Every structure is written in C-alpha cells, then in structure tokens.
Length: 154
Image 1 (tube, helix red, strand yellow):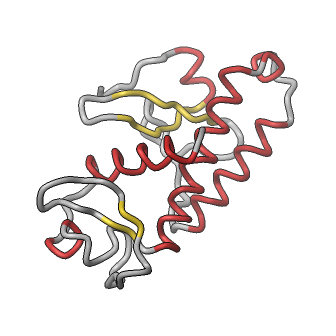
Image 2: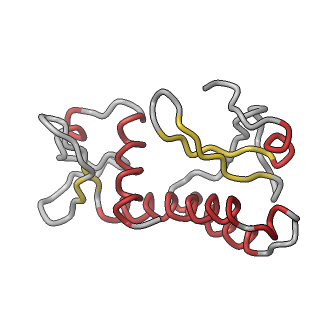
C-alpha cells in the first residue's frame, strides 16, 4: 500500500478512535502520546474546521509501520496461492514484522474478531473490513476465518 493510502487509513483510524482532547483536536498535542507539538515536529493527519489532529514524528512513523505491515500481510494472504495451500513462508515473515511493529507501540495482544479470545501463535490472520465507523484492522483465528467470514459485531 502506498504512503498516501497508509496516511488516509491512519486518519480514518484516528477519526473512529477515542475522543481527542481539545489540545489534540487542535493539533497542539500528539493524538497518540502526551507530547506537546512544536512547529517543525508535527505531522498533519487531516481534518477541517477546528479539528486538525496531528502527531509527533516518532508516533506517526510507528503507527505507519503498524498499518503498512498489516496491509502487506493482508494483501499477501489474499493474493498468494501458496498461502491458500499452506505452503508459504512469507506469511510468517509478514506476521512477525507486523507483530514487531505492534509491540513498538505497546500493542501486543491480538484478539480474534469472531470468537473474542486471544489469537496466539501463528494461527491467526488479518481481517480487514468496513464497519459503520469505517475501516477496521482486525484479526481472526485461521479456523474462524475458514468457518465464518463475517464479524460477530458489524
């Protein structure tokens, strides 16, 4: 996925996330950490009117890595015939890269969207879908994905 698409997805995730403080909504504080933003150390995420969320460069880089590794892993699984047959090592490499990126932002646990339990080991995969709120970067156990392709709470 290209950088502009990752940026748009990050903006969509900020829009559907928890409410921002006044400082965050006005772009004076990072949307992901408590850092006050100086003029040259901010990345605009989009917005309009009085709502201009911004991020510090380290948080933006880390969140961009999470989103780009998720999309690379998801796209690979969708397009790889060897993965469908269970014979591809790239799946594990992409999963490891994504989990490492999640760990960098303090998100280690991955929940299965369908059965609402921890997805452990290699028996889960990304599950990208559109909810009423917008794009959702979710995960499902491989077995849940085979038996059910719609989230339990759409």
